Image 1 (cartoon, rainbow, N blue to C red):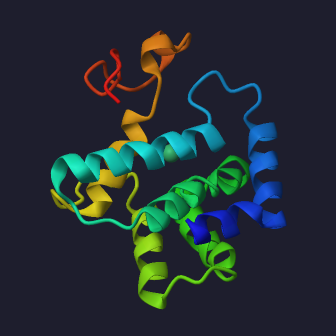
Image 2: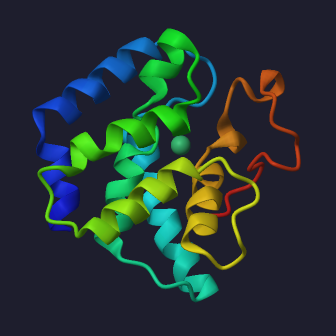
Length: 159
Ligand SMILES: [Fe+2]
């Protein structure tokens, strides 16, 4: 988990995280905070085991830490956050020891984390599913106002 912890210890990363928490402090719907990132990473790992999909834990956690970081830009100027996150990611990966191939994979996971058409049994699909499954709809006070269909909501504990 060396690279995950390199990213997490970066001053820039901490500042982004704090800014995002501040910008979403009054948000009644799902927030994009560290708890969400870690929940998502853990669920992605479980899904990979369940679906027999190859994965690297350090790579999955690193991608999860960065996948919503572009929410700041989305709030500020409306850019879709998967695009903004993917654009910011190389900056946060610069200090890591990931190979160029791994960095490309992380960017692909982030870019596709809201893409419903990821191929079955791909790591991108597991990452996409983990993002949704990490939400606590079953205890959310804003559940009735949320635009997710009941089918999409996690109305029971699944992971
Ligand atoms: Fe997310």
